[in-house]
Image 1 (cartoon, rainbow, N blue to C red):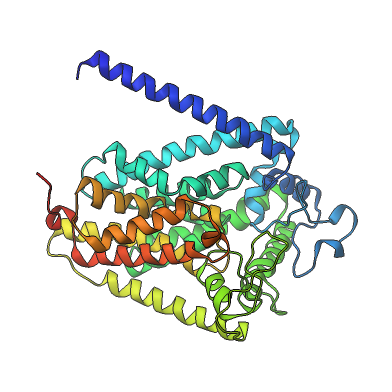
Image 2: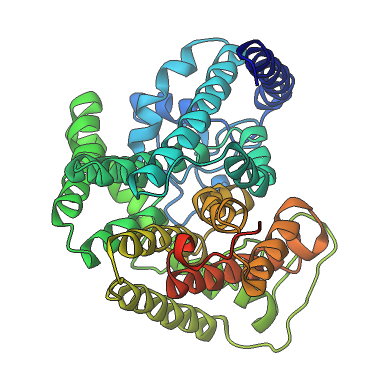
Length: 432
C-alpha cells in the first residue's frame, strides 16, 4: 500500500469519525439541555451554597425549599461523593448548551485516550501491538452502554478512563500514582475499589497505600480547603449514610438487597427478579413478576453476600496460580484484571446499563484471544458471542428478564477459562 493510499484511508476514517461524533454529539447535547442525568455541576453549586444534597433515608418531598435535594429537570437524587460535584461547579456558570457540549467533548476525548491506553497495556504485557479491529470489536461490544452513558450525560466513561489509566500506571512502575487514580475514580463509583483489593492480593502495597492516601485527599483534604473542613465532613457523613451504611438500614447498599431491587443488572438484582416477588419492569407502568419462588428478600441479600465472598476468594486463588514462564504469568495477570472489572459490575448492589462500559477491557481481552490470536475454543466463542448479542440488542430479555447479568456471568466464566488454558500465543491454533 502506497503512502498516498494510506493517507487517503486515514483521512476517510477521520472524516467519518468527525461526522459521527458531531451528529451523535448534537443529539447528546440536546438531550442534556432538555434534562437527564447531567446535573453534577448543579450539585456543586448547591454545595458551595451549603444546601443539603443527600437524601439520608428521606424522600425528596420531605425536604422543602432551597434544600430540596432533587437535581436536574427530572429532580433526581445525587449519589456521588462531594468532590466530583465541587470540581464540576464551573459548568454551572455557563449556558447549559455550553456545559453539555464541554461534557460531551471531554468524554469523547477520554474514551479515545482509554482505547490508546488499553493498547499500551497489552503492549506492556508483551502481547504486541493490538490490531485496530480488536479494539473495534471491544467498542462494538459496549456500544449500547456507551450510547446510554453519552445520551444521559453520565460519568461511567470517566470512571473507566481513570481505572484503565491506573492499571497503565501500575504496569509502568508508578504504583502509588495508580492508587491515587483509583481513589479518584472511587469518589464517583465505589465498586472499582475491588482493584485495590486485587493489588493487595498481588502484594502491590504501594498501589494499596496510594489508594488509601488518595481517598483521604479527594474526600477530605482538597474539598476541605475549597469549601471548609466542617462542611465537607458533614457532607461526607451524609453521603456515607446515603450510599454505604446507615444505623437505620436505609442506605442504598443496605436497602436494595432487602427490597429485592430488580430493575438493575447486578447479581443481587438478578436474584431479586427470580427469587423474590418484586416488580421486574424497569420503566413500564405494567408490573412484571417473573419470580420462580417468593423468598424473603433478606435471605436473598445474605445469599448475595456469601456469593460475593466466594467470588473474591476465588479471585485470590487464581492469583496464586503460577505460570510456566514470564509470558504465561503476564497473560494471567491481564486476564485477572478483566475478571476484576467484571466482578465490579456483578457484586455491586447497584449496576445499571450504562455502568457496563466497564466491560470494555474484558471485551478487548476476548477479542484479542479470538480474532488476533485465533484461538479455536468452542466454549470461548460461546462465552463471547452470546453476551455480544445480548449486549448489542436491547430487548425485554435484557431489560426485564435480566439476561445482561447472565451474559456478564458467562463472560466471567470465559475469562476464568482463559486464565486456566494460559497464553493464547501458546495455545492458539493458527489458521493457515
